[in-house]
Image (cartoon, rainbow, N blue to C red; front, side, top):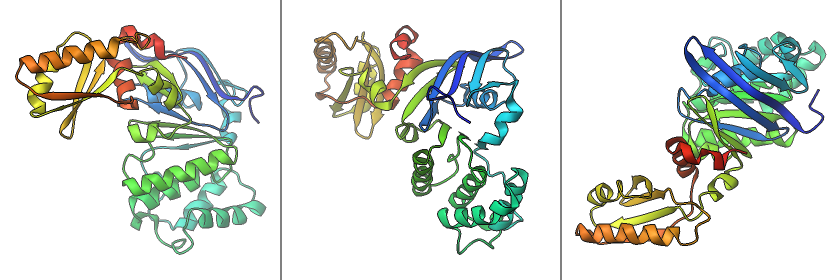
Length: 324
């Protein structure tokens, strides 16, 4: 089962209200098949609520959803056989072994008995549990538990996998290993929708949506989104960066100033298309610092996803430029 036009998930006007609270606000979404598609946003931005509606666990207040060619929520029961779901919390049985957990999930997901044993053997080998297959899940490290949870989520070989902040509780090395597994799944044809609030994870995605207070404020590849800020990011090296920051932050045309180590990263509001904008604001920054007795050097620098996030969530008038 799949979408005929290469789009695994399509949503139009997706909205969810909880009383007076609008948790998801008229979101339009297209998730390409066989991609790792990221949801970036702070806690409370609507990521988890959106995922729950897309997989049929929560009924929208308004809007239309089509997932793998099925209308949701009307055909949610049929969809469940074709999707996997993994949350940020370890959700397997800690008092069962690795193999027992996988055997239980295979039965729950309806994996045929003739296929179940070989499928579990494949996953134990693929996710490096050969020496731990008889170990109780509760005695494993956070990274090992996450790998086991991922193996359990794909035991029935779903076409689409939802992951809700799956690596929030694991160390950086385990996160890198986990993401390698996600790309292996995408390479074999699985579509993955991953929510995160971590910028380095968002940069790994093929395509990315940024949610802010329930609204979709940016959508595109990481390169497309950062490219839209070309010429609007500067690094300022000053003798006293804290004092320099207080001088720069209220200047016209400055959207944000953040200290990174001993330097300042400055994001401007000037339009990307204005060829002289970066030079002009650079001049204003240098003049203001000199007047305050702060010797400093400014250097243009490429934008990153944190700059994009700040631009679309702190400057509503500019958000339209990032929506696909």
